[in-house]
Length: 557
Image (cartoon, rainbow, N blue to C red; front, side, top):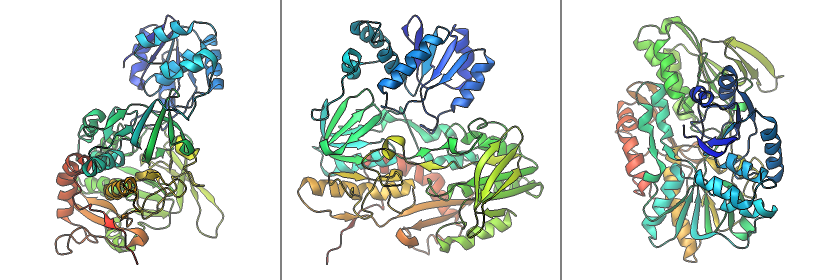
């Protein structure tokens, strides 16, 4: 925790965890304000976790969530009122402290000189130059003149963003490219299933963002507030403006923990866990490795979600451990799926069903988790079977692994780039935006009907890179995406059903059937997942080395 003093009565810091509260109280703070919305980051504790710890420490605590880059004048006024009423000194936090500092700066503009505000914030390490016009007179940010300009701007530094940046550099080294992402850490999220299964250590799935940004690519460490595609402009947190000739949008998706009533209050304790968060995956293994008897529930929400097989992977690896340790007979397993099938591509279902039978797991289809009470060890599901009235059922548990509902990020959903469901609207073959010809999208955020997996992004990145370079050269799209996605279904420790498929459920195997038959459990596929895929991810995919990912050319009649 890094506390930065702005004034005698106000300090800020980046994201805190519940264990930091005692130190905050020890340092004399009397109030805490959270300015970060829940679910913004995969490694982010919820406000409820912070609030409970703050109340136990005798601190006042308030929640004023601000979407990154969306600090309005009303938000600043509301913050000013909060600041005035709370016992001093006040401690505020968001992802980096920038939003909290911005709120303070704007709320104090009527009381302090601009130079004093800028001096105080700069001394604390926060540059308020981007909002100085608002501090002075509340002026609006023009989009006809940018603070910076690039040939290509990429939104998001995840698997898709860094891969497409590397693929572009490999094809056209002279391009001025900027990646916009506020995160300090880049996560290999496919590894979290293995962390929850006791195979990987969590630390092996994280590297610093700065070490991964390709050489020659500018990293703008900021959050996106809004898009102005008609002016080829991106508005950043702090009201800075970045202009582009071409834009690639790939910020991932948002885990909507709050959509399940009571979930944020009990995550990480009371037997409630999820491999969908970096800090919780180790808790999954803690629960699994210590469980000797009782009821274990695994949930899957309505689609779309990251890797449709991930919720059941957690079940299989857990059940396999219980089987190997001889306690499976004492554990009742339920897999509660909001959908109506075990897996969306039928060719892989027989192998999966054989493991469901082996582990004596009970499949509850059309069961959508809607509420949870961790202390009472109870969960409630809405059962929505076809042509029947929705029924709410209660289930007790000793352990529950939750896959949260998932949506596009807030700044995408409210943007001109989104379709009616909130996802970036693209042509599913060329991945070019349907309305804005100089915008492309890939990864989890776009609306093509493919599986949202890192393997999909690996195939999409070269397609987008090829088509962007073709557009620069005045040509039509030259590459197309076939919907490829891969889901290595870890059915037991040492064996994987390697599901590889494209649009419409077409099987798209990467290996000959004699080597790996993806419809059957394979030890070789396990070795691929455990030993080969992590280094391929870090050292090939993110560096523009397109192993088994060469783009398919557009076919012409």
